[in-house]
Image (cartoon, rainbow, N blue to C red):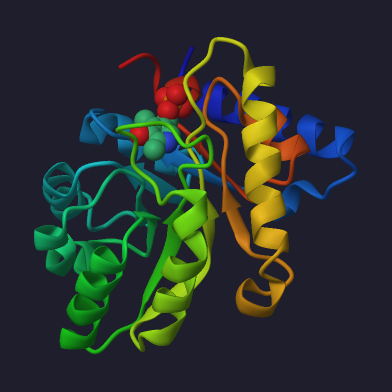
Length: 225
Ligand SMILES: *Cc1c(COP(=O)(O)O)cnc(C)c1O
């Protein structure tokens, strides 16, 4: 199947999941996750209508973005960010999904300040409390949020979650719901419609039913990695 056909199919599935939840599909942003995929595949996706590309490594993204600078698309960082790559990240990405510590907030804030911008970020929450997983522990979330709201050059757009891996998308549902509930406790800080980045190839329909506003889909668009 071609990337174009895959994208059409994904858009249909997004629309159906939104309809089941009584939601407008235009509320759901598709991030086409192009990590490990070659530039030709990314060109094909953009020509088929993808406008946001997701990468998980700064270095890999840097070379792709240089080569694909003519494309009408923006780039999101979905993977872990090391503080020493914050300077590059603020130059490359419209949105960083994976901010998960005050130290990283501070690094991104400084990097954005140094080039006179504000960086849009999401706070990644380790909602399942898994060990050795990225994301802020739920108990430390409020402190991280307060910290991020207090610095001048980052803009907190919402939250992101990666539930524990499972073959069964229903097992992810409680974690998606927990992220939505967490955001709902902070409407004063996050507003009424924060971004909720949740859902990948295996579970995006469940995520949409639970309120996702951003799905990060790689395999179902570009094929297996
Ligand atoms: C790779 C990746 C995805 C996409 O995964 P697929 O299962 O290929 O859709 C989404 N989010 C993050 C953080 C990823 O690293």
